[in-house]
Each structure stands twice: as C-alpha cells, then as structure tokens.
Length: 481
Image (cartoon, rainbow, N blue to C red; front, side, top):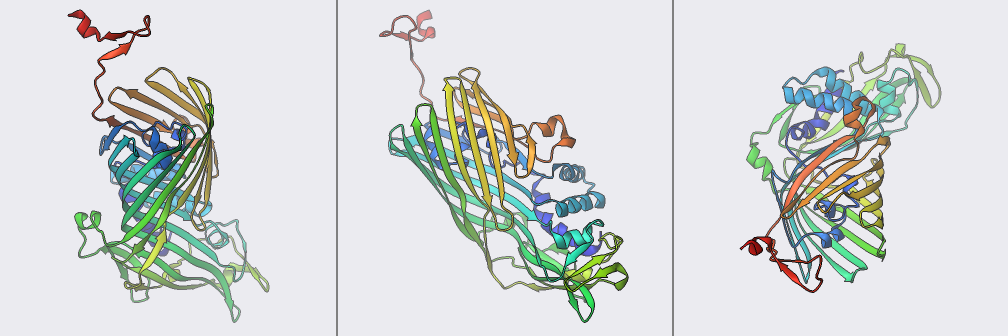
C-alpha cells in the first residue's frame, strides 16, 4: 500500500487505535433492551428510568467494560499488535482492504466516569458523565473498488462516490428525568446532554474517474474536516506525509478541552397495553457538536493520471482497466494533495439511534422481547434487530438469549446474565456468542460487563410470615435472643 492510502487510514483509525487499549463501556448491548430493570437500559430509552432503584451509583472503573465492533477478525489482529507493541503494516493493510469491501464499519465506546440515579414521588432522576468515542466509515463503492479490486474492471466516468467517514471523541454530561404519565400505563423520559468535543474526523470527500482531452484521471476534491491536536506534515508537492502532536498538546489539555461544545437530547416512552404486553420507543443522541479548536482540515485537490497501458477499453462514458491496475503497485500519492485549513469552523451531527421495542410476559419467570434499532448517519445508516427470551432462574439471577442481526451480519447469538443482590447488580452479556465459540465465522464481536450499587438501602426488620398472613415475624437474630 502506498503512502497516500496509509496516511488516510492512519488518520481515520487514529482515535480508534488510541482508545481501544483503554477500559471502556460501549452502548449497552441490544440483548439488555428488554430487561428494563438492568441499570444501563435507560441508555436505550430514558423512560426506563422509572424502573431504577431509589438510589443507584456506578463509578469508574467498577462500572464495567464493553467492546463492540464489526469487521472483527482483522480489527482483532490489529488490537493484538497494539497491545503487544508490534503493530504491523500487513495488519494495517488488511484492515484497510476489508474496509474498502464492506458497506459499513462501525464501533462505539463509552467510558462511564460516574452515574447516579434517584427515584422520588416527583419522578426518576439520573445524572451521568461519560467519555465516548465512536467511528463509522462507508468506503465501499465503484471508485474504491476500481482502485483496489483487480476483478472490478469497468467504471463509469464522472460518477462521484462519497468517501464517508465520521470519527469523534467527546465527553458527555447529561441529566435524565422520567415519570409515569398514566399510572401503570404510560411513562415518558427525557435526557438533556451537553457535549465537549476532543477530536473529530469527518469526510464526505467525493472520488471519481474523469476524462480530459483523451486522458483519464482519478480525482478527489473537497474538505476532509478534522479537529485534533495534530500538525500535519506537508511536502513541497502538497502531499501529506505524516502528522505530529501539536505543540500545545498534553494529555490533560486534550481530556479536559471544553472549546468544542455541543448539545443533544434523548426522548422515550413506554406503554403498558395490558399486564402482559408493553411497547416502547425512543430517540437517542439527537444532537451535534460545533468544532472551533485544533482545526486542521484538509482541502483535497488530488488528481492522478491513469497511464494508457492500464486502459484496455473505453467508451463515451466508461473505461475498462487492466487487472494489473491495483493500489498495491501504483502510487496514488497525488490523490492526497491538500491545502491545510486551520480557520474554518464546522459542525457534525452525531449518529442518532431510533429504537422500537415489544415485550410479552408469558408467566412470572419467562418474558419475550423484540427490539429494532435504526442508526441514522448520512451515507452510513444501519439497522439491527434482536429477538430474545429472558428467564428468571430465581429472585437474584436472570438469563437472556436469542437471535440478532447487527447491520448486515446474520449469525449473531445474544446471551446475557444479570445478578441482583441486596446492595447492587452485576451483568455480563454479548450480542454475539458465536464470536467466542467460533471466531472465524463471526463478523461482529462484543462483550459487556459491569456493576452498580444501591445506596442507603433500608434495613429490613420484619418479613411476612408464610403461615400467619396478618403477623409480622421478627428477624431471626432477634428470635435467637
């Protein structure tokens, strides 16, 4: 892979690689959606806050860890190299090549710093601070296939393909509120959010094949917008060859940067059709971030001539290439000619999730659930679906399992367990058990676990007698005396 493509993929994966080695918690797996009393479930729907205990607390690092992403095999190899301190060019190239052949690559991380919940007669309240990083790319198309795939031979002229990429790292401060509107029927929830952006990469750069005076060119034009503590190295030929940390960069300055501000909101409802059936719907992360600091966008004006010996056929609106014309043996650096812009501010909308859920309580110990999640992000939309059964083994332990489609992956087996004790809750789950049992057969991989604590739990001095309904028996420790 030549320098230009290596530079692009390194910039796209920069934040991902740096954060993958941290402890983090991803957006709660879909397998937990229909377990409304799971303490992270309000991340799907703020109306679920009505199910939380009176006082709940979750704090880093006890709040847990989760990692979830598709394209898992090459990414897992890259992660192993990162953790071992021996990242190889071969693995980087493998990741890029798979990104170019996939309709969508997506992942999301959350590092929960603190979460506190409180229920009262006024409603249910929740305050949390999260560190969040997420990335989505959609690089597959005629232009990238023509460059990288020796079997993709013919392309139409003047048909631009947008190279979509959206990577963002930010801190989220949020306050949630939920309340029953109609007792035992309708609940409504809202969460207001303030975002402080740390780094961003946003691309809708079009790439296309053009013709002029009988010559054919690959062209990339437009801004690749970035906000990050980096200084790009630009050669005399306007080609970006690398990047260094900016002079004012320190880890503290980066983590506590408050100059890129945004706002967002979550909305949700639940409705009890009858004691056995419940429907729910929500919108999560409807918001945007304004980027004003550490601006270093790249205005691309790349053009690379396709040599005549690589063209075996041509027409008024198409050309056909020789299979030898692929990115591994042709230098495309000229596609990455850029002018750095450190003044133009920009805004990015966050990927917004829409949830719709249905629950059926068959009996006191068995519940079935359906949930559909649609993630809206320009050029990178994704839909996922999950069907699960939740079984209460006893008063403390519940198990969930079923089937899920995550985007365009269809061999996903969700599995989770939740354990409650008097003073807290612990959970462990994945949306794809196949990734652990048969890794080579799984495209999507992820695991999530964590704990929360119930504060100020009142001491129980009495319990209902099993034999005399109107008599309250004293605690055993008192009876012994």
